[in-house]
Length: 220
Image (cartoon, rainbow, N blue to C red; front, side, top):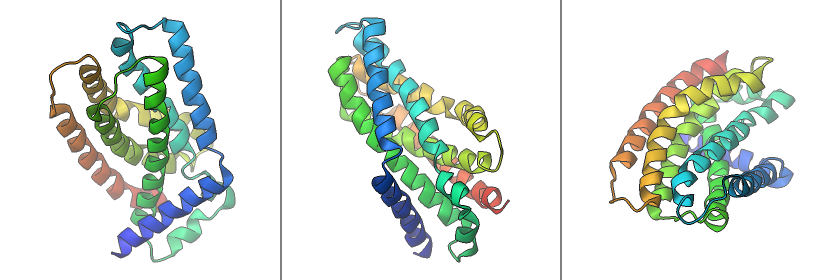
């Protein structure tokens, strides 16, 4: 119970800080809308080509939005030198990491709520519950890995360059499986829940590994 309460407290702190400062969400929303509009005019999409190209556009935008969102996970603590003080509390590094990852996942989920309707409006992408479920499941694992590498990169000078180098190769399974699931849903293929099961397996694996590694990364 202490672990859950601490994680929720850390996540609530980050979300309240973002709500008051409004530094990240407006920039991400602007980036998402601009990327979708550019894709619409660049590819000249119609009702035939839209569902075929939309999955690639979706995951491309999500990956870059995730890099921005997760890159700011430990920004406030790094600027104010408050991470050490948080780790000195009885909370424990794993609970702090879980709260950070939960807040980052929530911010990315809000961006997805902007991205998916924007794709439906500008690109004519058909949306379904399977699309939303696929994106949300991928967000969980991507958030765990992204926050872990953000914590690692925050201790280096080239943190803006190191995070993409570390995170993007391990995000490939989510992009590949999620992209196929979204494409099948948008093109009207028969319902197949196997990609969701695979994404759930990836989530469990990477969340456990990231939680175990977080205590060593944050203690450094």
